[in-house]
Amino acid sequence: MIATGVVAITLIGIVGMSIGRSGGSNPLGANVGMTAISTIGSSINSGFTFIKSGFENVINFQKNAKKAESLEKENSRLQQEVIDLQNKLDDVQSLQSLKAALNFVDEKYVAKTLSAKVVSKNDGNWYSSFVVSAGSKDGVKKDSLVMNGNGLVGIVYEVSENYCKVISLLDTKSSVSFKLAKNSEFKGIITYGENIDEKADYRDSGLLQGYMFDSNYDVLPGDVVTTSGLGLFPEGIVIGKVGKVIEDKNNSLKYVIVKPNVDFKNIDDVVIVEPRNIN
Image (cartoon, rainbow, N blue to C red; front, top):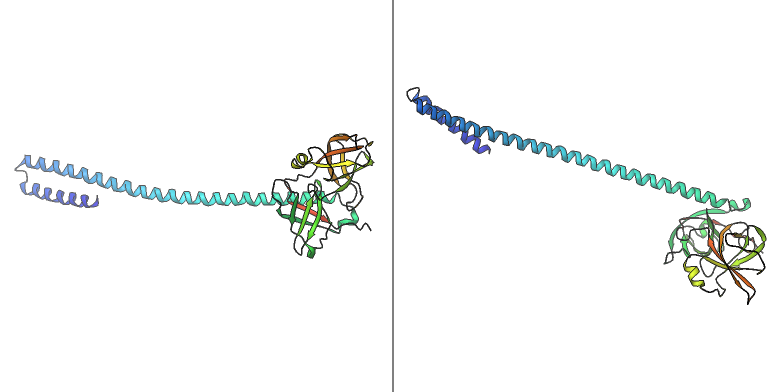
């Protein structure tokens, strides 16, 4: 287009010279010349307009590119702010959960507690066993109590220097003595050793199983179940609520299906308490 403009200007010069030579003696020639100049001038004007438009498009493209880059940077900054805020919220929730867990701990054991995070778990949906980020170097011992802000989780089963393995109340190796909150005399035990019909289905649904020490104990769905204080576990730690009562009159047993207070599908932070000396 620039080359076209140069050619057009040259033609205007030639035509102008021709008109100058002919002077006024040939009006027809002069008119033709002026018409040619007008046509060429119009072409030149169109060419410059096109060039100007092209430059404006380039400038606008550069401005839009800078604006898009600026918006992209701002979007990245805002996304990072959201991530940072979510991390802070997670930290606050973790602290609240750990603080709530300490409410279950007797004052004389508080100094012997430590917090830890879950780093891996067993296959499947439920946390029946998992590994946490604390070991013997942190003072963790086998049979230490493990809980979170919702209640009893399980016990430490194995200990290495930097980590320990926990088995939860859902694990078949677990057992814990309990009592009913409404009457501390009504006691029983959570265990998977009993031959309860459909017991595999209950466990697969994340429910705990056990039985009352006396089949005459008055236990009903909705009764709150806590640790009894017998064995390794201190008294009064929430386990869950009775969901179903099954009477086995042939064996004079009363089984209970307990819905745990802890969400065994979602365990992130735990408190580990040194085991009691029961000797």
